[in-house]
Image (cartoon, rainbow, N blue to C red; front, side, top):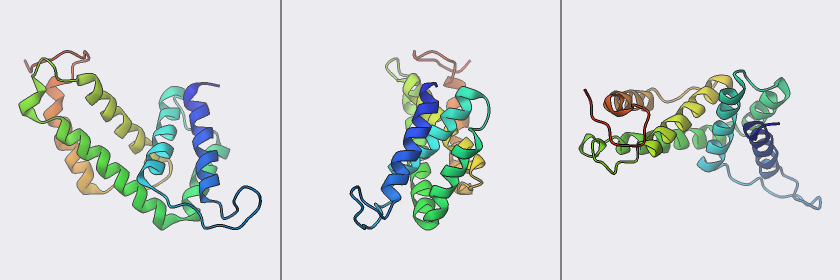
Length: 160
């Protein structure tokens, strides 16, 4: 089993336990809050699975992800929305044209951040969740700004 495969299973198990109303030892408790980091973990793990395997995860894992979200839909919707908002904001601000041609600009980091956004979008599609259209417009504008600089190396590249 590969890294993305294990990470998805681990994320589902840990996030399911965090949402449980039964604490270790059998005591009742309130489920832990759903945070944007939880959404990031689930969405990126799911999207990375698809990238690594070229197909959706097995039905039992996809069903587990859907059940996790369906158990607390408002909390998960808010966490997913905020996580995607933060990820797109980071990418958008990182492709500021004033810095893209600098020799010390970290294109590898920027490409990695963009790939993580793509993983999230793939996961949203699999989970049949919608992204905020305004955020997608912001992402599209950032992609257009970064396009001429996104050549493949970690060194500074200038548009032709």
